[in-house]
Amino acid sequence: MQRKLSLLTLGGLGLLFSTSVAAAELPLDLTHTNIGMFALAVFAFAYILVMAEEYLHLRKSKPVLVAAGIIWVAIGWVYMNNGIGDLPKEAFRHNLLEYAELLLFLLVAMTYISAMEDRGLFDALRSWMIRRGFSYKSLFWLTGILSFFISPVADNLTTALLMSAVVIKVAEGDKKFINICCINIVIAANAGGAFSPFGDITTLMVWQAGIIEFNEFFILFIPAVVNYLVPAIIMSFFIENRCPVAVYEKAVLKRGALRIVFLFLLTVATAVACQSVLDLPPVLGMMTGLGYLQFFGYYLRQTLESSVARKKIMAAKRGDEEALERLGSVVPFDVFSKVARAEWDTLLFFYGVVMCVGGLGFMGYLALGSELLYGNWDATYANIAIGLISAVVDNIPVMFAVLTMNPEMSHGNWLLVTLAAGVGGSLLSVGSAAGVALMGQARGMYTFGGHLKWAPVILLGYVASMMVHLWLNAESFNIFG
Image (cartoon, rainbow, N blue to C red; front, side):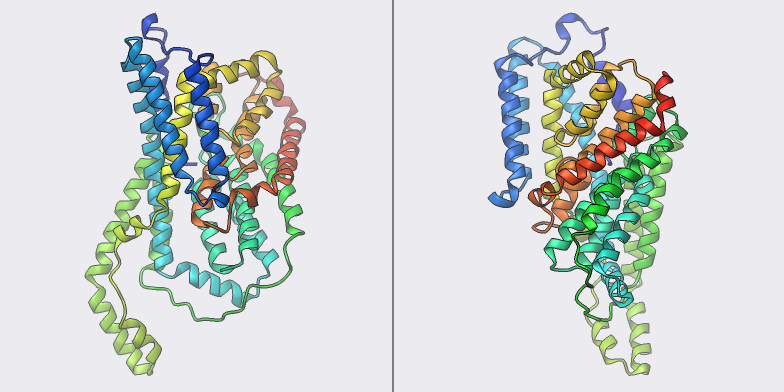
């Protein structure tokens, strides 16, 4: 997930709750007030509308955008009446910064995917898969395994977007298969991201906090594998053992297709290097990568005429009328047209969720929830519950609330809550950034209801991964940080 908080952001949020602030300037606890209850009800109602998107045909961004506005207006009104209007302003700005990083990261990833689609990469991949005779079951396992192993490096959201684009092209029009394949991709990408500091927000936050060392995350590999394989094996029995419609069209890669793939990999590497080497937000590397694409787009436009002329001469010599016709309709590559094709409903939905949950957290609900869990339950049970909560409530504020409380736990339990928050979002399509993004990319084919039908199977994988971690890494539960 791209919503990766830098130490600067965490520090800024920490300042908000610093004990050095005068008592009159501390955030108010609104959890037991009418305003607080009203805000909670507004958020719950908005989420119900999101879940019913496929039945109401109401874009998922609309209810959460309105809910975010109502929640923060309510906060502002309460604080203004108490003469401390500056606190919510600063809190809102911190949440907005968090969203800005997510927005820009997502925008770059979506732009690259759009550019690769424009250059015919996914059409060519689809054509190759059909020629190889891959069955639906083979495609199901291929995309799932690739998602699992790519997400620890490229993060779960970017990986899910890439793999779903391939599935949509290969199984074009087969809604049932696309839905189950997208579910498989979400589970695999979230599980793969759970055993790498760069694969998911939960791992990055815990690593940045200095609680778990870089190499210690890798003991989550086997539990993550179990989390993916249990539901994947069960779902695979419900996939028809047939091949996609064999349309053997000749897919031609447009000029620059493979170089754009290289630039995308370079962009991901730049983002990872910014975080791991310079301790800077990964979004810096992603935006730099957008610059790579812009420069390459400029090169493609400047050399278009000479390239087309050369190819026309070669096609004429071969007598290739199809190529000559295709070359006569070539249009210049435009980066900004690719930016415009980003899934804006998804991007606005993320804004609404981040701001809603941020507002409820500012009211005190996240701290209250964490206190109730760790104050009344054993840490192991509390951490497993955190994962279930993260299926509904975004895992950024949930993990931040846990880090803020900083309960005394063993390394094993810190790894448990990291794993749980990372893979718990797979239970619902709205539980992770990967799921939400795919609902936008595969609109009408991958839906909340379609994902919900498989929730019991996904829950089996969740429980199995927790049990495997508790058994396999039992010694780590006796090691305190």
